Image (cartoon, rainbow, N blue to C red):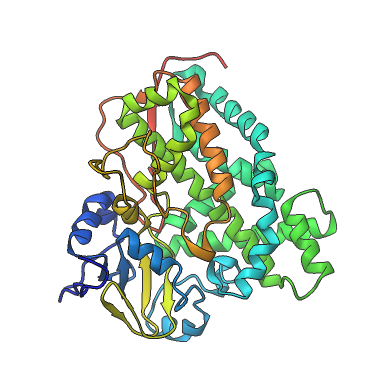
Length: 413
């Protein structure tokens, strides 16, 4: 079905985002794509909304000027209907992820320098050092859960060092952010509260004793140039940098490792030619996006997407995981097949348009370095024991493995 044909709106809305749906995400999205690029669905909170599953329409929706990221104009209606939206009181409301221009432009500009290509490349030696340090902790054992030993702590260590978060609090932030991004609403709210409380306290500490880190620089912007950054925006920016700034990379690494464990011949291809890893990272992003679906967008006016008429106030979500499997590939190639040599590997896993992920250069750098270290230091890495299938995160907008039990020949640290 082309984007100009009428969208299919069944009488009984398909349910998405449940643990069962997420466990079989690629099959469920393929079934929806077979019917069209956009559908009216039942979201996890019970409300109805529009879900974009096609690649071309995803690019259109992600950059559409009539789809707003800011829930504030719809807050009263959302609360009345019992919708679970991360509003200002959650600590997410003051950040660029839930803002439109010109506010989005102002907030993004304040942190963009820290994620420029040059600034990110300067972090490469430290990222590689950390990657080796984490491998050192489990390499002699010959087995590990890579989620807890490597793919989780490495991105958290990088973002904590960038922001100036003490090393002893990394585990707390790891727990809070994973729950905030992927757990049901009750635990999500409690985790956000804990994260907010800690970051408020850290902001006050750095206000009195600033250091050479990103959070101290943001505090200086707030205190020395009032009007560019409010207290709520300072906290919201800190929250989103910690949460979204590392969780995407955790799942990018986890999904990539799952793909390589399931396709050992492709792991060997990269092991023999490490220069191919950057291109392979793009294929991992296409093959299994670390953010399964975007945060909600809101229609500010009546519009048409893929033949579907979207009314003002309707919600639209883009399934990035689905879009990757629908992206154009070379003639004769199977989009459901992993190919680490695929070029180009098109995807929208970091978004598209003005909301394109500001941390994408850092996520790519971490993924390239981490995968090269794993492939080099653990050449016989494989699933531990009989493989019974991967357990995926059961809720939330992210997609990644809950555990990665692996084994390998023990290696001296």
